[in-house]
Image (cartoon, rainbow, N blue to C red):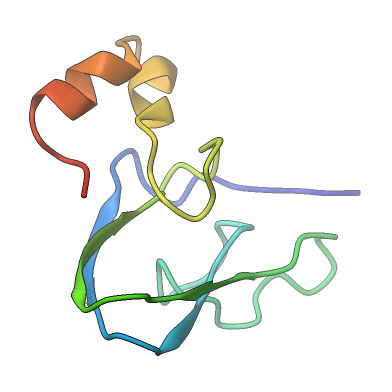
Length: 94
């Protein structure tokens, strides 16, 4: 059974470094969001690796419902009663 939990209603902005691989928490249970800490054990959900192609700030999904994991695509706006365009119009994507 694949059990995911929303960890946040907003994306998590993180400065990533070129060539470094990060393990994004896909289950929402990690206490080290947006990174995996092993809390997914027994959920049927596994972390997703993300390798930075350049050093920059990346907005990682916090609601765990993005269609472009691990990157935020604004889906949290739909969950909160808005629309994806509201998020991107505010310049929140990289």
